Length: 91
Image (cartoon, rainbow, N blue to C red):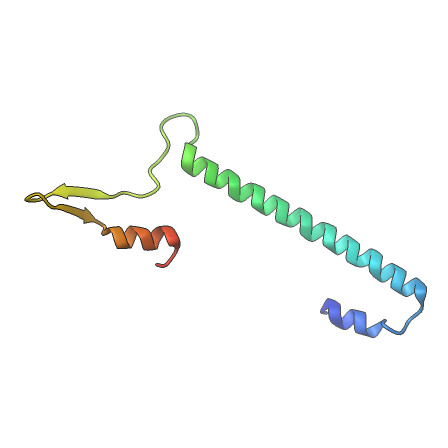
Protein backbone atom coordinates (compact mmCIF):
# COMPACT_ATOMS: atom_id res chain seq x y z
CA UNK A 1 0.00 0.00 0.00
CA UNK A 2 1.17 3.49 -0.67
CA UNK A 3 1.54 5.86 2.25
CA UNK A 4 -0.67 8.45 0.56
CA UNK A 5 -3.49 5.91 0.24
CA UNK A 6 -3.16 5.03 3.92
CA UNK A 7 -3.30 8.70 4.85
CA UNK A 8 -6.44 9.24 2.78
CA UNK A 9 -8.12 6.30 4.52
CA UNK A 10 -7.67 7.87 7.96
CA UNK A 11 -7.81 11.57 7.05
CA UNK A 12 -11.18 12.11 8.71
CA UNK A 13 -10.39 10.11 11.85
CA UNK A 14 -9.86 11.69 15.24
CA UNK A 15 -6.90 13.33 16.90
CA UNK A 16 -5.56 10.03 18.28
CA UNK A 17 -5.29 8.55 14.78
CA UNK A 18 -3.56 11.69 13.50
CA UNK A 19 -1.13 11.55 16.44
CA UNK A 20 -0.30 7.93 15.59
CA UNK A 21 0.03 8.85 11.92
CA UNK A 22 2.60 11.54 12.75
CA UNK A 23 4.49 9.06 14.92
CA UNK A 24 4.45 6.51 12.07
CA UNK A 25 5.77 9.05 9.56
CA UNK A 26 8.47 10.08 12.01
CA UNK A 27 9.59 6.45 12.25
CA UNK A 28 9.60 6.13 8.45
CA UNK A 29 11.67 9.33 8.19
CA UNK A 30 14.19 7.94 10.69
CA UNK A 31 14.50 4.63 8.81
CA UNK A 32 14.96 6.37 5.45
CA UNK A 33 17.50 8.81 6.90
CA UNK A 34 19.51 5.96 8.44
CA UNK A 35 19.42 3.98 5.18
CA UNK A 36 20.64 7.01 3.22
CA UNK A 37 23.49 7.62 5.68
CA UNK A 38 24.58 3.97 5.47
CA UNK A 39 24.42 4.06 1.67
CA UNK A 40 26.44 7.29 1.45
CA UNK A 41 29.01 6.01 3.97
CA UNK A 42 29.48 2.76 2.00
CA UNK A 43 29.74 4.63 -1.29
CA UNK A 44 32.43 6.88 0.17
CA UNK A 45 34.29 3.83 1.49
CA UNK A 46 34.26 2.27 -2.00
CA UNK A 47 35.47 5.56 -3.50
CA UNK A 48 38.20 5.82 -0.85
CA UNK A 49 39.43 2.30 -1.67
CA UNK A 50 39.38 3.12 -5.39
CA UNK A 51 41.45 6.27 -4.89
CA UNK A 52 43.81 5.16 -2.10
CA UNK A 53 43.91 1.37 -2.52
CA UNK A 54 43.89 -1.07 0.36
CA UNK A 55 47.15 0.25 1.90
CA UNK A 56 49.01 -3.02 1.03
CA UNK A 57 50.35 -1.56 -2.16
CA UNK A 58 49.89 1.33 -4.55
CA UNK A 59 46.33 2.30 -5.40
CA UNK A 60 44.89 0.57 -8.45
CA UNK A 61 44.49 2.63 -11.62
CA UNK A 62 41.03 4.05 -12.11
CA UNK A 63 41.42 4.04 -15.89
CA UNK A 64 44.23 3.51 -18.38
CA UNK A 65 45.23 5.98 -21.06
CA UNK A 66 47.97 5.17 -23.58
CA UNK A 67 49.78 8.15 -25.09
CA UNK A 68 52.01 7.72 -28.15
CA UNK A 69 54.23 10.42 -29.62
CA UNK A 70 53.95 10.05 -33.39
CA UNK A 71 55.76 12.62 -35.56
CA UNK A 72 55.36 15.48 -33.06
CA UNK A 73 51.73 14.54 -32.49
CA UNK A 74 50.27 12.89 -29.41
CA UNK A 75 47.86 10.03 -30.04
CA UNK A 76 45.62 9.05 -27.12
CA UNK A 77 44.01 5.65 -26.75
CA UNK A 78 41.20 5.81 -25.75
CA UNK A 79 40.58 9.31 -27.02
CA UNK A 80 40.37 12.26 -24.64
CA UNK A 81 36.67 12.60 -25.54
CA UNK A 82 36.04 8.93 -24.64
CA UNK A 83 37.79 9.36 -21.27
CA UNK A 84 35.79 12.52 -20.62
CA UNK A 85 32.56 10.68 -21.42
CA UNK A 86 33.59 7.81 -19.12
CA UNK A 87 34.30 10.19 -16.22
CA UNK A 88 31.03 12.06 -16.75
CA UNK A 89 29.09 8.79 -17.14
CA UNK A 90 28.01 9.34 -20.73
CA UNK A 91 28.86 5.81 -21.89
